[in-house]
Image: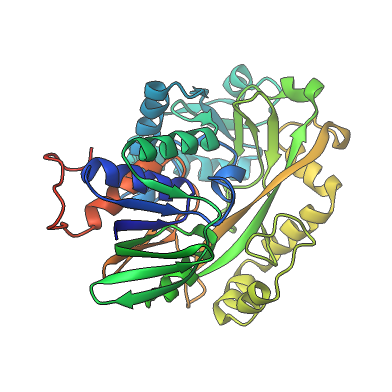
Length: 406
């Protein structure tokens, strides 16, 4: 019998396992992951940015967890010898119409307690010589890291704490049995007193398995990236972002220097026809039908029809993708870009057609379900893990550490 079973071995599931082991050193903790490696989906396919927290609504979980997580992630990397770099990032306006939005973003950064600096077009060039802009913001606390490396360290710590980690183990049913639950998987059954659902792209389905209303449905959006050819990497020194488009709920295509020295450009955001659909041709009838028959999706599609159509065109046309990148760096040419990996973002959509704008953690009976944890969940992972553990009722049969989770 396990005290806690975590479903999902991405960065949030592993962070939660680590935080639980610190809180309850004698607990029997199980982490189940259906893939053959940790951090296989959202965690392993993102752009590896340690976000500052500038974008998020003041007072939201995203704003608080990201700002604090930016600090705790850096401390974690320092403590465990994980490669990272605090390179800062520029957010630039490419025409005068964007300047009021840039100013709003600057004010939001101040409200969120972030070190932000207004910079002129000339000062932008000091940070990023090849960028064309009419002004920008410099955010000093933003950095880069490999979140796969972070996850491997989280997993190692869970093992050292005595946790049981199992790959290639897919949860197929959750059965209540007295005061505990049985997770029926493809490799056998596991009894546990408490379930924590960190299943990412499948979190809504796992919640329903556990008889809990996830309060939203996961709609998958694929983000496709290009990579700059090695001889053109010098065009980008750090991180270059546009001012977010208020007519679209994603950040827009940007340039990211990765921790391995490569430079990625993207992502766009297009509806994926499969929850784990990393290629344009990937299709799953169940996943597709669920989205197409969900009335809220059509409300969302109507609201963002124009921008959504542009994203689809950009997905199929390298020339259009290149043109959007040239707004930031005019020197970039189509032949400088090579297609690279894609990621799929698990975005929770409510019945009213609104995207869930914050992290969503739903309580069940002897269970907690993380039903929305897109970006900046990787940056925020240590803070999310601590918050989940704080929401778990005191376990009378376990001896907690004296201090709260720290």
